[in-house]
Amino acid sequence: MKMRKLFIICALLFCLGTASAQQKFSVASPDGKLKLVLDIAPEKVAYSVKYGKQQLLEDSRLGFEFDSGEFGAGLKAGKVQRRKIDEAYELVVGKVRRARNYCNEMTVPLVERNGKERTVNLIVRAFDDGIAFRYEFPEQKA
Image 1 (cartoon, rainbow, N blue to C red):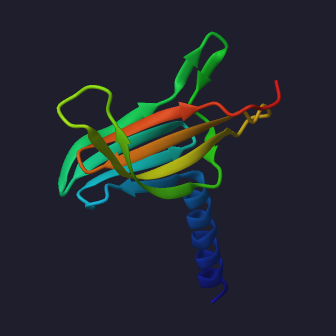
Image 2: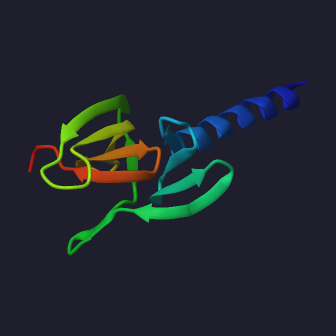
């Protein structure tokens, strides 16, 4: 009986440790067909893209390489923010006069786990016909 309890406790601790080591977040297009999955693991940050059941991109790495080292390994996610965007804007030139910006957005703060704790915000937008992402460098301590 003691051995069984010990096994269950060890299994739970292992599952909790594994779950905290890897984080996954996703954002889908407004029509739900296009989906980006962001996978934040201790050794890398990667994303994959699906359209319906078809895998378009598999585990594409994200990050930066600086002279002082790589920024992309040893990151954790901060508080994720999500929002829906549906706005129109005027075009100066083009075949149409107005364009529509219609997407779902996810902002993921990526924080270094080491002592520096620098933060980069990864902003991902999922449109019905594509995915866009950008890096935002918030003001922080030097």
